[in-house]
Image 1 (cartoon, rainbow, N blue to C red):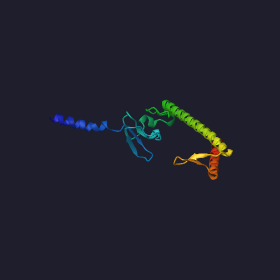
Image 2 (cartoon, one colour):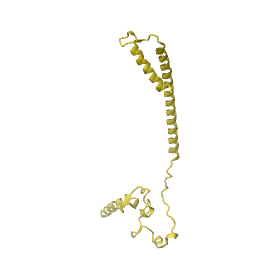
Image 3 (cartoon, rainbow, N blue to C red):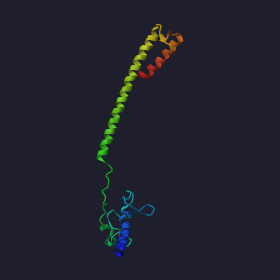
Image 4 (cartoon, rainbow, N blue to C red):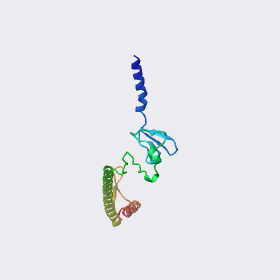
Length: 171
């Protein structure tokens, strides 16, 4: 029975070791940071105390004893164990370019549609203005559905409206 207690106690003591952080570094404020993710790119290599998958350094030094005694010029530059992101994902870049091209095509189609509508409005306004300038009597249907002949004030107002449409759409 005592053996089972020691076995359980041993397992309980080993649990915290498996949950320990994989990365350890000193942040810009001088505080130690423990994490399961790599430090941000702005943390210098010298402040990274422990990397993922490597045991913590002994004796509180961040360098191995052989490195501490070697002069700076003879030290090889440390290479990060994790691959550095290139900053450009080819697939994402292609999708972005495709989306931009589609957006430009959509805008061009919309501009073409608007230009066509303006041209039609221009033609109608010119035809209507020509009709009002001819002096012929013009009738309209009112809200009750009755036909009414336009008086001089209504004709002048309609001519003015048509002229503003011509000025805005017939450029």
